[in-house]
Image (cartoon, rainbow, N blue to C red):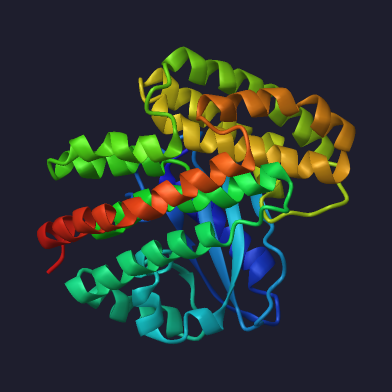
Length: 345
């Protein structure tokens, strides 16, 4: 499917399901398709992110991934209050990129296009770029400091993994690149190569713990994850406990979670597949622990084996790794500043 066709399907979904809602204030595209031309091919391992803006301060849970007119969409809701001050959007590393180009799907009030005009004008200004880098850096510090050691181990893993992965976002933001989710390490590698700093990349992988992993081990862990994923997807279909990522563990999402990681391995980028393999493993076990505890226990060994290959076998290992990431931040910041000198104005 072409990106333009997928966008058209998304616009039809918004018109049919989102626009009639009383709090509807507009919708826009976000994520990895932002900036792609309409005639580009949308890989089967990608979806189209749609953000529905609502007047509600406490919007409903996001529908997540769903198919509409043949396109795989990722739908989420955002309160208008988070977009109201343009300076706040320009300072937010996960919001600003969506308004760098015209991503507006529907704008009944005209305020989204006004926001786009302001953000696109100042997006590349160095003070704003550095503010967004700082926003990402603070997210790393705060979330690593907030790891709950009393939580189940799979939840501790997620609490360590995602802020550790934000180290790549600091670099992507500095390079005026989209802070992508699943492909963050691949994108960071490309940025470092573009700026002659590929020597820095093994350190990012080292913080994750996968710099030494051979491709065959990553393939093995993906095969084990695929079995866990399929079991969890069947459980999630009748699960009682909702999670914000529940729609990521469904048959519709399998091309992204499993096939997307396989595609990276096939390209020789097996290290770049590790982040999402571990994230998906931990999310599967979060779902299973809530609604199928016996299955969760039975499938824990492959998850633990994947973590052991990263040097993580306990909570103390996670805390030690979190400390390593925190100590790394000054060097990360120096690299980000160097990149901004080449990209920002």
